[in-house]
Image (tube, rainbow, N blue to C red):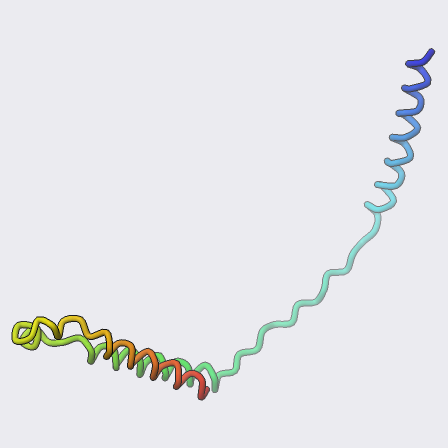
Length: 95
């Protein structure tokens, strides 16, 4: 008898939760409209120019083979690269 009452209780509970789930399943949610991103071409062009100047600057930091042969310490010019990077950041801040 006890098992029959427990089974009935479980059945009633399942039915109560099932109707609640089905009620929520029929709801529709409208998606939030996505606005397309805008591109500021003036800023983009400015930043690309800053990057180009920085790469040209860093390319000039690379010593020639003759310069390295004459002065092996010239092979690693960290100060030159740092200066180029600093100029790039300053340039981008102006954009």
